[in-house]
Image (cartoon, rainbow, N blue to C red; front, side, top):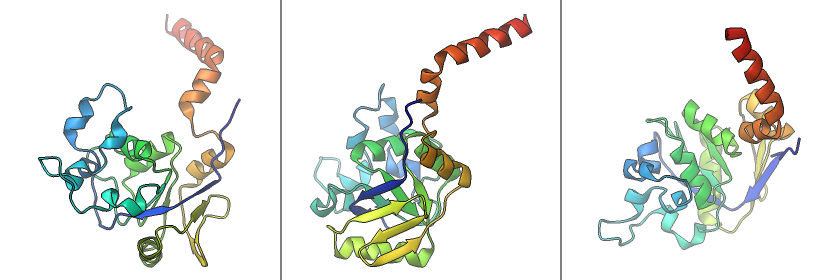
Length: 200
C-alpha cells in the first residue's frame, strides 16, 4: 500500500483567537450546496471577512501577512456546533495543513483526521504563546512534530497531545481510509460477497 505518512508539518501560522468558534462561522450554511469541495477554499469565515457588498472586513484571514499560512492556532472547542465536514474542507482548501487548539469538537477533529490534517491540543498558556509569536513575527516557521508531540517556533517549544490512535494513523500513513479501501478493492469486494452470501 502506498502510504502517505504525516509526521511533521511545517509552515507559517495564522492566529484565530476565540473560544467556541463553530462550524457555521467557519463555513456559512449557504455554501453547503456546493456539489464538490473544489471552491471551498474561498469560504472560510466568509461572513466575518466580507460585508454584503463584497468589501473586506478586518479579519485575520484577510490579512496579507498570513496568506501563505498553513498552521492554524486557535482556542477552546474549535469546530463545535453542526457536524459538517465542509468546515475542515474549507480550511484545508484555503491552505491549512494542521491546527493547534486548546480543544476541539470531537467530530471536527475526526473530520480533520480523514483529510490528513493533524489537530493537536496544547495548554491555554502555550496556545497564547504561539498565537503571540505568529502575530508578532508572521514569517517565522512553525513545526509540528507528531513523533515527539511538540510544536516549535524559533526558540519556543511546546508540548501538544492528540488521540493515540489518530497519531498512530498519521505516523504510519493509515489515516486515509478511502485510499486504503480503493487500494484493497478486491478484498473489499470479497468481504462484501461473503457477507451477502451469509445473509442469503
